[in-house]
Length: 214
Image (cartoon, rainbow, N blue to C red; front, side, top):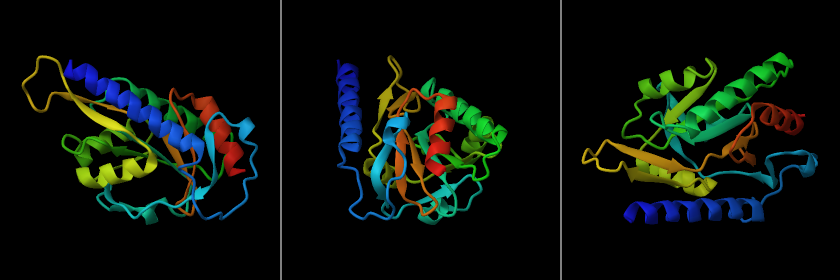
């Protein structure tokens, strides 16, 4: 019964997060650029205006700080996941890998940096996270941080996640994490401009990216 309640709670949180994003509650107060893309052409969701995010401080798989400055200077796609994930994370990362190679094949110059941020800092060391993301594409990056830093960042971005203990297990390490599968797109100023909800398809992600960047 507790498991059912937790799952119900997570579903509600995810739905509320998506509604908040779509309804404009998630839109910035400051308009930096005019929207030049027809939202009807996109499979993802384009915000009405780029949105800056609160300062955050994580550590990248290169052992260097990963923070707001890390989102500047290039387009960035961010996905929140974890290495023990059974389906959503490997599926999403595989599609992002295919998308990246599609963009390369099409000769796109300003390729995105793709970053997976762990929502499971207890089990995801930088080494483990590094091996995981690089398995999908050598260009991919990863970052982790303290649980409270991850919580603050995910709440701001409308990403929900919930630890669920595996049935019949007394081992505190035997748990799964149910989470939102959205991919967030940041512009070279480090502002959120769009997001893509799961399930993801490489060709649609590539198409949206080219429309938005162009």
